[in-house]
Image 1 (cartoon, rainbow, N blue to C red):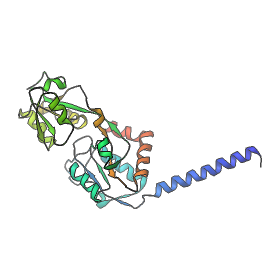
Image 2: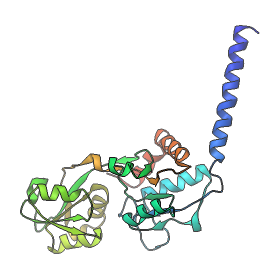
Image 3: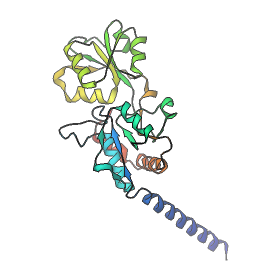
Length: 257
């Protein structure tokens, strides 16, 4: 066999092997039932509107695209809303396969869970009332004020380091209305959901500062059990969606910032 024919044969064999590998990967999750929980952090990442059984948002759209490509089934054909801490507990006790909804991939969490590639990065910001505190421009401006933070989040550190009177909360929407009503002077939270709330509900006269901080703790990904057997194929498909522009289009559709 001549050199040219040998090269052609090698290329053909490699192509067949690659096609076989891709075909196997595509069918690897076909008809597998996957249990997904979403932390309803708020728009645009994951939120509940009128239909409480079908959440919406960036993370939801990514899951549906994964389902379209990998052909798995969603348990009860839905994504279940659940608070983040409870979702993490389910990952550890084997009753959840994927937890989504503004889940930050951090070194501490990587010790406990498997994660997909990061699909969107942001940071923390400060939300304040344009009526009560129009002067607020940076994190330094919260010194001496009552500033809310989500219980168990890294925002507490920034609130205390800035000299604020740090106040924990469990419900973001209620906390935002407390800022609007003057019960809190501000809150520190992940920028995407609060920026979306400020944009969509102008009547509450809230604003976010331009400053973004703690970006390393706001690298959003999906969490899975540490030894999840389908983690590799899910991660490869997320990477593919990042490369082919699918996730960029989803982020643009939801005006993520």
